[in-house]
Image (cartoon, rainbow, N blue to C red):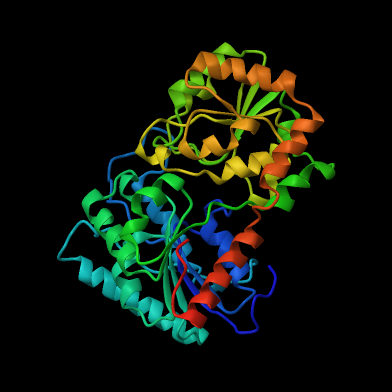
Length: 402
C-alpha cells in the first residue's frame, strides 16, 4: 500500500471472524493487514453473536462444545502479534445479545477487556472499525477518532441470531458511524439513506497471489491424484449459502468430471461424499488456496437462493477471476457486472451444461479477459481509497458520500 500521508493512523477492528481459525481472505482481515503499515492496528476476533444451540450436531458441522473449545483456545492465545503485522486478541464474550437484562454486563466486560488491551498497546484515539454488529454499544461509547461500520452482509439473516436485536444494532451503527462501507450494490441502494455517510467500496482481491499462482510449479499432492477435468470450489460449505441438493444433482449429471471441494463443511455433505466423482480435501491455509485453484478446470459457485445470497458479494468471485478460470454460478445480484466473463445457470441441468461448455470454450484470450476484469481491484487499492477518505474527512470535516 502506498503511503498516503506521513501521519500515523491507529485502528481497532472488531472483526467478523477469528484470525486463528477462519479464512484470511475476508475484507476486514485484508484491510487491517494494509492498515498496519500506517500505524498500530489491533484485530479483535469475532465475539459470539449466535444464540447458544445445545443440540448435538449430526450434520458434519461443529457442535456447541466444539465451538466452545475452539473459542477457548483462541482466548488462551492472549494478545499476540500476527505474521500479518497487526495485533490479535480474543476477548471473553457471552452469547446473550437476545437477553436484554444481560446485555449491559456483556458489554461492560467487552469494554473493560478492550480498554485494558488498548492501554497495554499504548493506543489512544484510534479509528474504530466494526465488522461485527454485536459490538455496537461498545464501539459507539469508545473514545475514538472515527467510527467506521462495515456493512458487508445482512447480518440479521445469519443463522441462529436474534434477528430483531441484530437488526437494531445494524440500524444504530448506520446512523452513528462516521462512515458506512458497503460491498453490495443492492444493500447500498436500499440502505445508504439510513447512514450518516456511506460509500460503495466493493470487495478486493489478493490479485498477485492468485494471478501469479500458475507461474509456480507447486501443485499440492492431494489434488494431483484427482482425475481431470476438475470442477472445483473453495470456501466454507454452509447450509445458509451452499445448495447441497442442487450440487448433488449436478454431480450426477456430469460423471466425467471430478468435483473437488476445498474448505470446512458445517453442512451435511455425507450424500456428496458418497459419490465416486467427489473429493473433499478439507480446509487449507489461505496462502495455499491459489495453488489448489490453479489446478481447477472450472470454478463453481452453487448458491442457495435466499435473502443472504441476494445481498452477498463473495470474494471468491474475484479470486476465481484472478486465477483466470471459467466460472459457473447460480444467480446473485453482484454477478451481473461480470456476465461477460462468467456462466450463470438456475437449474442443475443448465449448470451441468455450462460446466461442459466452460471447459471446451476456454482459451488464453478468455483467461486474460478474466484477470483484466479484476486487476485493479487489489486490496492495496481498496485500502488506499479508505485511507484517502479518512484524511479527507479530517481536512474538510466531512466524508464525501459519493
